[in-house]
Image 1 (cartoon, rainbow, N blue to C red):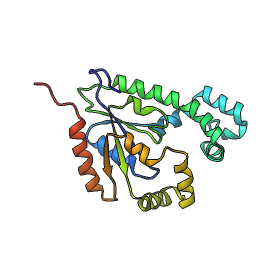
Image 2 (image 1 turned 60 degrees about the vertical axis):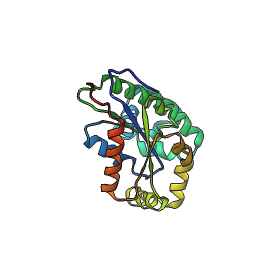
Image 3 (image 1 turned 180 degrees about the vertical axis):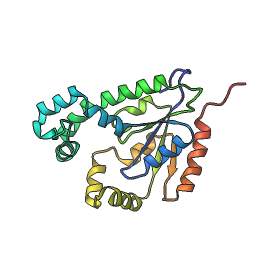
Image 4 (image 1 turned 45 degrees about the horizontal axis):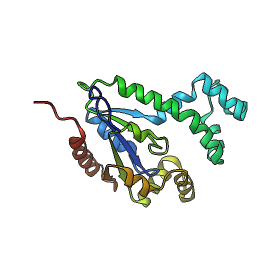
Length: 207
């Protein structure tokens, strides 16, 4: 871990599926941090011509929509049904996303940006914690996570368990994180915790 002094500190966010990682990222964004959204970056990577051609070689034309772009739902149905195909996709996507993040971190101006935040679904699994100076673990009761994914994504309890099973155990993620933020559903409380963490992490002005 660690970085050159000419770049802002890098904060990673980890947690279970539906824990509210993006809420924590948005709060940090409101405090002036640069938030790198790995989901958005991964979608951009899927639109890369080389990546699209590789997916067609693997899975055929069914993964490309009528508009010529990768059909994300077709890809999702393949990779969530087959761990080997999921790992194959990750090995193609993750290095490119990491490169995008490294470039953004390198280009961040510390006089403007107090910290860079990595909002990454698979921070540890993808090895992106190596880019971070601090990792925040978002701890959320399972019932609240289930409510969130049912409302936002239409998943049931079995689907949440299946998605979670493709990730590292929560206790492992928590143990490897530097700070824990409890997200029990009260936004103001989460904001207070995140502000306190941010004050500890942000660089202090020199004398």
